[in-house]
Length: 195
Picture 1: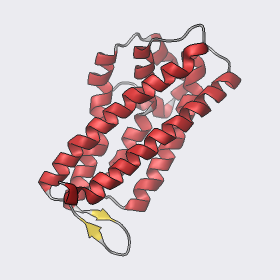
Picture 2: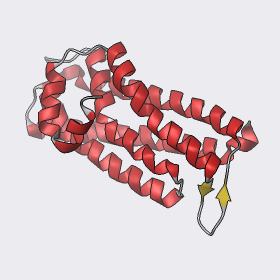
Picture 3: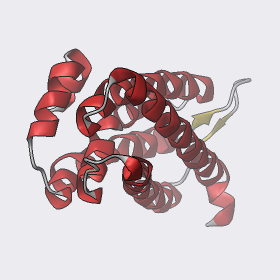
């Protein structure tokens, strides 16, 4: 958790500090990912049960506590899986580099890079669809910036090579993000009918 503020205020220096640490995946998940991934889940739970999804036109769709709890658990597991999947993507894409980091290091890196996306979940306290999409897009852009400055340090490659790697990783990450977003819309929007 001590890296959250640093990733937002001085990401260059923070990425160097993260690289120098030899954090295990279990430590990273228990001290960062599990807590940070709970932010969008808890906020969406509160927002959808107390306010309801505001889809525009004055129409809100509130969820029952049981439905929101069930969907929140599923959403939480999907987020955790998304971080692990991005760690595997980074590891796979680094296969040609001589100093290819272990999959564990790639997963830790993916968890830190996802920090802006976790924090963007705060907006779900008032689940206005267009606002959630706007804040999510801004968080995704900042995640791309973290990739851009972090990949060259993480893989010991130059900025140009890092830009290509970060761009490819971000493209795959956007695909994963879109899948998560689609699952979220389906689960939170149509969940009451499914459960």
